[in-house]
Image 1 (spheres, rainbow, N blue to C red):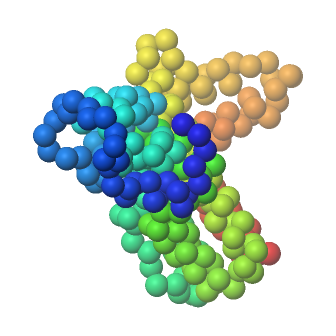
Image 2 (cartoon, rainbow, N blue to C red; image 1 turned 45 degrees about the vertical axis):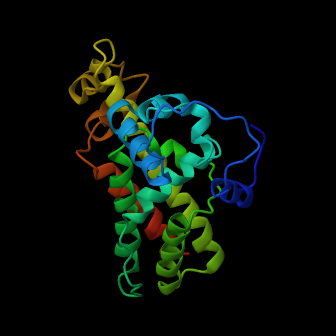
Amino acid sequence: MGRVNPRERRAARHQPPNPDAAPRPRRRKAPITVEQVIDTALDVVATEGYEALTMRRLAGALDTGPASLYAHVVNKADLDELLIGRLCAELVLPEPDPAAWREQIRGVCAQVRDQYLKYPGISRAALAMAPTDLEIVRVSEGMLAILLAGGVAPQAAAWAIDALLLYVAAYCLEMSIAGRRSTQDDAAWVLDRDELLRRFTALPAETFPHTTRHAAELTAGEGHERFDFTLALMVDGLARR
C-alpha cells in the first residue's frame, strides 16, 4: 500500500463500506472490531513474539482474510501504533512533584519497560514512530510535565524523553532477543554469566589487562540492575545541566 498520513489513516478506519464494491465471501459472521484486532495481535505477540505478527498471521488468528483487516487497520504501521497505544493506556502517570521528579520519571520508564516485556519484541514497534495515538501522546505529555516540574529546560526535556524511551525500547528488544537465543542449544552457553566470566578471565592479560582484571564487574548485574543504573545515569546527568 502507498504511504498514508496519520490523519488519513484514522479517517480510513471509520470509512463506511463501498456499496459499489463487489461482494466478497465472508469467513465469519460476527463483525470484527478494532479492539478484537488489538487483543488478537497482542495474543500472537505474547505467544509467538513480535516477529511472527504479520497481517496474514493476524487474519488467520481472527479467522478472516487479510483484506478484511484493512477496514479497521490501514497497514502494519497503523497496527503498531494501536498496539503501543494499548500498552500506554495501562500506564499510571503521577501528579508531577518537583521534589520527586527523578523518581517519578524513572518510575514511568519502568512501567513502559514492564509493559514491553510482557510481549516479546514489541518494543520494535515503538521505534521510529511519529505517534498520533492519544494514549501514546498522553504518556509523552505526562513525562514532559514531570521534567518541567523538576526545572528541566523545555528543549532538554523534549530530547530527554526521546532518549529515555529509545533506551527503554532498545533494552526490552535486547532482552527479547536474548530470551529467544537462550532457548537455542547452540547459543544458550554464550548468555551464561559464568561462561562469560570464564572467557574474559582466560584472555591474555598482557593484551586485555582491564578486561581480565575487571571481568567480574563487566559480567555483573541481576534482574534490572543495569537498566536502573542507566536510567539513573541519564536522569542525574539531566539534573546537572
